[in-house]
Image 1: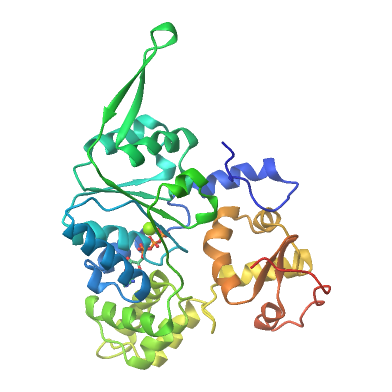
Image 2 (image 1 turned 90 degrees about the horizontal axis):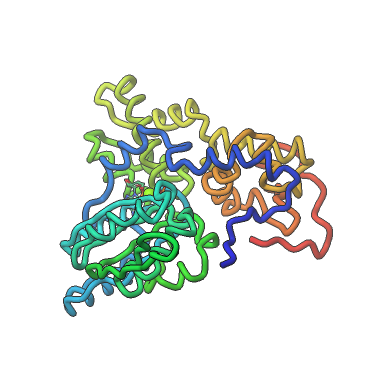
Length: 364
Ligand SMILES: Nc1ncnc2c1ncn2[C@@H]1O[C@H](COP(=O)(O)OP(=O)(O)OP(=O)(O)O)[C@@H](O)[C@H]1O
Ligand SMILES: [Mg+2]
């Protein structure tokens, strides 16, 4: 089976890159433990607490209602979208709405079919098995999962050589909810086993304002509406980033405001110290733009080459840094590599590089 696990850019450093790539395979890489704690503290518990993503939520509500009414088992669901946008949140809310058990696993830590087997045999009727980073499942594990998802059975090989035989073990009917930041890296057979596929996109500013205001209450702090808009505007359309900024601004407010209220001045001061600029870019994002400009004359530059220059795993660049830069129109992906756009130069206060030759077509 052909797996699309190769980097899309041609690069001379494929081997050297392997070690950085491996580092990026750790689910904990680049994920501050404090963020994880905050994620749990502020995670919506019910579907009605999930803000924004209206169309996705509305479609899911219909599916959940209909499934409950038929007393059926929910079809497998794939959630994709950039980090911190609500995939795990939805995956934990859904079983709660359905009143069923939830088990959580992650692609990179399932080394072999035997690691997946306990989850499958523990699955109760109608329960949910959440598999995070499902695009990182190893091929053998993925193939073991196919019959489990399709026919609710697993084939277990026993013995070796002439004595080898396969036993067929039936499973309870359960639901896989898969989450991925890279729908494009899923194999076709894996993708096809999901009945429902939902894409979560960056949030609108007004949804983020609501998330910030609500979470301020949860964190027992007050934030003025203007300050909430400022935090929302600078959080790259991403609830996790909005929550992080909120928490940091709360610290400043505690120290600087008599009642600990987060005002616009305090938010602006905190954002300045956090080095988050007017567009919401963080230091790392600006470093990406600067690197492509300084070292690659603004591009086109291959992902791996940029990653090397920045000493950051290519996966981290592609998952965590690039999506917003692309969306904000500061970077463009072309068949020959990444190119900094005119707006990218202007954002850094630089004179734009040469225009792309006519007919040079971007991919994104
Ligand atoms: N729709 C939402 N409404 C309110 N809060 C949200 C929403 N989506 C996400 N959040 C907040 O953002 C945090 C991060 O979201 P979540 O963990 O679901 O992201 P994710 O998509 O699973 O990210 P990753 O790809 O890094 O695993 C949550 O704990 C929650 O506090
Ligand atoms: Mg998650």
